[in-house]
Every structure is written in structure tokens, then in C-alpha cells.
Length: 324
Image (cartoon, rainbow, N blue to C red; front, side, top):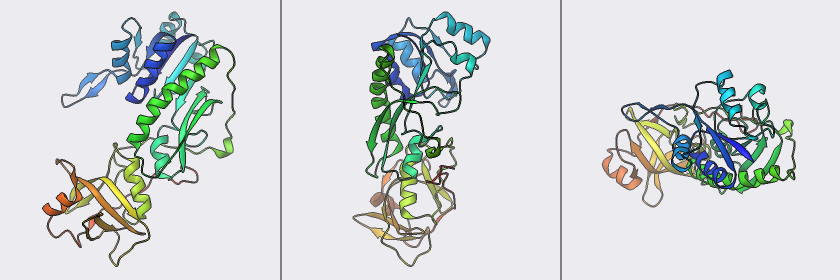
């Protein structure tokens, strides 16, 4: 099976390596180099770097757009199947028509739940009981193709987006290889998606992490986990930005303080903050420009912390029922 692999970020690298190991990798399509680091020098994507290191003879295409010249370059590679993981662009019918076996896409959710660009954080924000992976047929509408394989993962309620991304990177590679093998021998089966069950995620931004303390302790804790490592949950203390890296909710406990007020410091649990419903223990915090600190160390260096107000109101970008 002659395959054109398409993807860009780190999460797609294990799948690239697995495809190159088990099949005929004829080319890699990725996003163009982007500014990175303090000097903002253009750097190739993680997929491009991995392809150059592990498959030095395989062409790497990194165009700004997929126009006629790019389609001609892809046609010259004579690919049979398009494989996509986190490329970030939607393919038109002329591009998809270049592949006799069509295309497949790895999507880190249990489709049709959490279509769109941010399925992992949305599953955490919604406090889903499970998440997973799907390999789907590429369709003209985003994430609407038939599911060719899926793997479920129960959620324990403490996972971060970083942890789930690492799992999806590893498990996605295995599931992808299994599905491509079924396509190659003609035994793959397709499961149509139920449109009535579809929910949607949207693209995250760096501003999404601002905590609204009128939300419940459970909601804010889910937000902290969903936005770790990026964009990071944060609030303000004394007008300065304060990152929240690890929290723990106590939904049944409450105090007389207003939401956002530090109710006290519990030596065994954390810095206890009143929310709209319940207390939230802040366990690891990071002041702007400083290293992360456990709550005991942070409290030792902070003045008059009990009774202080953590400021700012924000919003949650997800309504669990619909994702909109």
C-alpha cells in the first residue's frame, strides 16, 4: 500500500513512524515551517523533523496551500491511500480524488462526539466518563466520515489533556496500522456516524484559560486539567497573573466566603478557594516568570493569603450537551 502521510504536530509522529515501518511511505505532507523560539526562526513541524530523520529518502511537502502545482507533485508520488493525523486543513474533492483508496483520518475522540479541532480538552471539560480514538474515512464535511476502527478509554476524572494526548499518540499509531491492514486486504468494515449524536469542539485560544470563580469546583478543576499543558488555566492575585497547574475539587464542602476568596490553607490538601459550588484546593501554582511551586511553598512566600481574592471572570467554551 503506497501511502502519503499527512500531519504536523508531535501527536502524529508515532503514527508516521508506524506507517513508514509497516507500509510503503511515498511522501509526507505537512504544514510549512513556523516561527519558533525566542528568535522566532522558522522551524519545520515535528512530523517534518521525524520524517527527515527516520525516512531520509522520502519526499517532504510543506506547501502554504494545496493548489494545482501541489496536486501535481502529489500525483507524481503515485499514492494509493491518504493518511491524516492532525494536519489542520480540510481537503477538497480534487485533492481527495488523487487517491484510489481514498483517505483515512485519526481523530482522538469517540465520533460523532467531539468533532472538530479540540476533542481531547472538550472530553475533559464535559467530564465525560470515557473517550477514545477513531480512524474514519475522510469526507468532505469535517469529521463526518464512516468509522473504520475505534478504541475506547475509560476516564477516571483526573486526566490532563497532556496525558490523554500522549495516550492518543501511542494508541493512534496501533489503531491506524490495524485499519490500513484491513483496507489493504479488503476486509475493512465501515460504521456510519449518527448525525443526531454529533457534538462539536472549537479551536482553543490562549485566552480560554481565565478562571471564572462563579463556576463550580468540579467545572474549574476540569478546566485546569483540560488546559494542561496548553493554554493553561490562570487567575490573578494582587493584579498579577497566577497559573493553576494542579487542583482538587471538594464539591460537598463550602464556606461563607464569596467565589474567588481564599477560604484558608489546609496543610494536607492545599490552598482552599471558594467557588460557585464547593471548595477548590490549589495544589501547584506558578506566578508569572517563576517556577511552579507546591502550595505549601507558595503559601510560605505569600502575605495575607487567607481572605485574599483571586480575581477575574471568564467563561467555559463548552456546553456538555452540544459542545457549542
